[in-house]
Image (cartoon, rainbow, N blue to C red; front, side, top):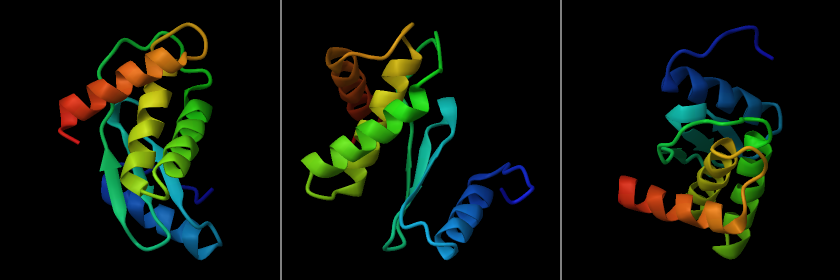
Length: 119
């Protein structure tokens, strides 16, 4: 969209803020195995790692991440950290299976994320 390749977290945040200038409210960026960054409407920059695992099929992982983010946001009454945690768990769980992840697989990844990153 901006004709560039982001190579650092700072690049990602910079261009996410440009998206906000264009009207986006919250910008969620998946970085595959490197986690995700969320730039919130109130200016928070939240980075979250992902649980480790073997990628089997990444098709649908981004959609699962968005669905998990929205679920986490609604369940936590708007807590962005919880939303991002659920989003990264859901995206990772889907990437680690041949089809879409089940609730149980997502819950297991959520628990691993909390344990691995102390959150």
